[in-house]
Amino acid sequence: MKLWLLGFGFFGINTIWPLYNAYVPIFLKSFGLSSFVVGGYMTIDNILALVLSPYVGALSDQTVTRLGKRKPYILIGAPLAALFFFLIPTFWTKHNFLAVTFSIIIMNFAMALFRSPLIALMPDTTPSQFRSQANGIINFMGGLGAMLAYLSGRLLYETSPVLPFFVGSVLLLLSNTLVILFVKEPAFKAVKSELSVKETFKKSHAELLENLKEVVLSKEKSLLFMLVSVFIWFTGFNALETFFTSYAKFYLKLPEQIATGMLGVLSLAFMLFAVPAGYIGARIGRKRSIILGLIITAACLFTGTLVASKISGEAIVKPFLVLFIVGGTGWALTNVNSLPMVLDMAPERKLGGYTGLYYFASMLANIVSPPLTGLIMDIFGYKVLFNFSAIFVVCASIIMILVKGGDAVRRI
Image (cartoon, helix red, strand yellow):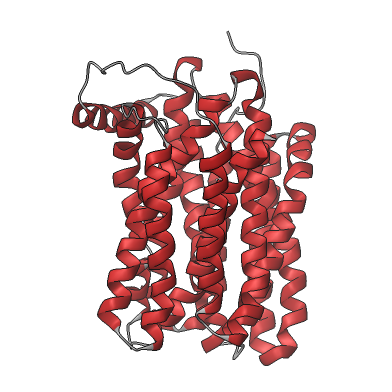
């Protein structure tokens, strides 16, 4: 029960981001911004996460209060994020560009403030032997939140553009209130770290660079190829995730709320196929599963471009739903098996550090992708979105062919 309650924190976070990614680019575009500038706005969350998360995580490690180490950050960050998330569409309806920009920045800052402490609650409260099960529950709850946001956000948006943001803010508050009230942190003694928070922050980034240098200079390049492939396929997928609602509205001539519902189907397919994807990876090998998943995803993207060139308007919804269902299974095959593959290629003593490399590669992709995609669409138009995304996915699959190892083996 405790794990399910903790999962509500991730449920709340994942009701926010799908709505943010679906509608904020549309809001920003209405102010006459180029797609490149819109993409720049959409990297703010990843930049803040990359810069602030290690610092906040280190700070929470040294925090001692009656509530615990992590909860004070949730108590500050979640309400602040909820408030400014709600204010984004509120100010947009008043055509106040500066207020929208301010709300976006503060909302992203607040999310970065409590995300790391919330994630740290899982290992804090869960014994080591149960953490895989706990991670599965947390990811399921996060996927459920994303699916509900996409599917219900469409209906709410039809009533008012402000309404899905209001409901998302309320769910973020309620879900994190459950965490505060019912997830009990273990008692920690107030032991002062030998390093200051600033020194801890520097040390965490120094270790990341050291591990990255070790991977780049290693004679065996498989792990480097793997991380490059991760970066490339996340660059491609983030392009679709960030700009699909804009693509649907301005190129396919679909209302943005219908596009959001279509993304919900993609999220649902991914969630339902996540567990089978793990079993398939164990059966045929992770590398083969990842390449198969990338090929399926790329095929769906190229087919999407072909379909969009022949059909537009609401007639395109059903073919795209089929493509999104198939593409969601391919995306699950790729993502479910990728982190375990990286970890099985890493030295036992550096599993944590190499986990950081994996997330660094994916987060860096999420910083690079939106402005790059926006620039390409400014030059060639929205019609190139699916082909642009597909080319990156194909390149990732080619690089994956060079990867050796990474399937479960007994290491000495």
